[in-house]
Length: 276
Ligand SMILES: Nc1ncnc2c1ncn2[C@@H]1O[C@H](COP(=O)(O)OP(=O)(O)O)[C@@H](O)[C@H]1O
Ligand SMILES: [Mg+2]
Image (cartoon, rainbow, N blue to C red):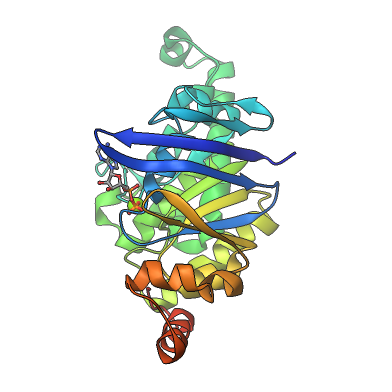
C-alpha cells in the first residue's frame, strides 16, 4: 500500500478544469517530483491533498484512509505537512516561534495551565522547543543559537524558505509536500537544499512530494517524476524518461519537438540551474 494514493481526482474552478482525472501514488520513503509548465495544476494538486480544496470527484488516501474533504488541520494531524510557493511565515515573530506554531495543536493543556505555567505545561513546552531546534538543525548552524530569536523579517529569502521547511517538519508529519523549495535560491543554495531534501528522507525518515522548476534539482533527487499539463498527468517515470518524452517536450515548448530541437531541450533540461 502506498503512503499517499491520489485516485482519479478532478477539480474545476468555474469553467476551468484545473485538475482532470489525476492519479498519483507515493510510497513510504520515496521522493517524487511533480513538474509541468506554469498553470499546469501543481499547486492545485497540493491544495487538494492538504484540504485547502475538496476534489469534485475522485479520492485521496493517506496511509489507507480517505482524507478528501477533511480540514487542513485534520490532515496535518494525520501526518501531512506542506510549504507554500509564496511563503507564509509570521514576519514579526522569531524563527523559533514560527516553527513552534506548527506544534501548537499538540499542546495538551488548557489556558489555565498555560497561565499558571504548571510543571506539566513547562515540560511540554520544553520538549516542543527541543523538537523545533532539532528540525532547524537540518539547515546547519545558520538557524541556530542567537538566530533562533531573530524576527523572520531580517532573514534572507533562502533562510525564510528553510524556516518554512523546518516548520513543516516540526508538525511531526511523515509526508512533506514542498512547493518549489528552491524558488529564489541561487545555484549554490539550490545545490545545498537538494542535499538537505535528500537528508530529510535518508536521515529524517520523511517521504517527500515536491513541485520544482529547477531540473537539476529534480534530476538529482527524484525517485520518480510526474508531469502535469493543463490539469492532466501527461507522463510519469524516471527523470531521464520524462525529459526525453516527446509529449513532455511539446508541453514545455508548445510545439512538436523533432530532431535537433529535441536534443536542445534535453540539453537545456540537464543544465545546471536551468528551468524548462
Ligand atoms: N482558487 C482558484 N480559483 C480559480 N482558478 C484557480 C484557483 N486556483 C488555481 N486556479 C487555476 O488553476 C490553474 C492551475 O493553477 P496552479 O495549480 O496554481 O498551477 P501551477 O502551480 O502548476 O503553476 C491555473 O489556470 C489557475 O489560474
Ligand atoms: Mg504553483
